[in-house]
Image (cartoon, rainbow, N blue to C red; front, top):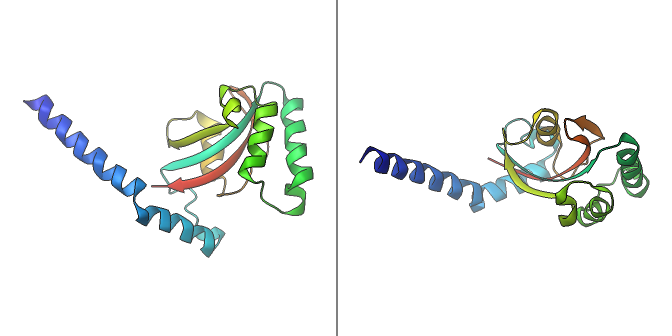
Length: 148
């Protein structure tokens, strides 16, 4: 009986979170944050991030990929379109996610290791991180969304 009541409580909590996370109010809030400016985009306060990444074992290879991002968009102050980032991830990334354009989907705080999580949750929506090192190699992240 104790297990059943705990499972029901956990299910109720999970359903509530699911409704909040997937509900229109969070999507609207996220859109509103993007339109209202950088100061209110939820950096450090969101609980989930949607991201793509490029992972390379060697620093030279990630720098080459990042240079292509710089040459195509970043040096002009433009944001990298997700489809273009996905093409580079397919070409350069050594992570299995590279086959999916580097798409990691939505992930919560605490799922990813140290520096990767720090950079993913600190990168603004639509922005691309500079190359950085983690225990798995060298990465560049494109943040595609945030939600609580």
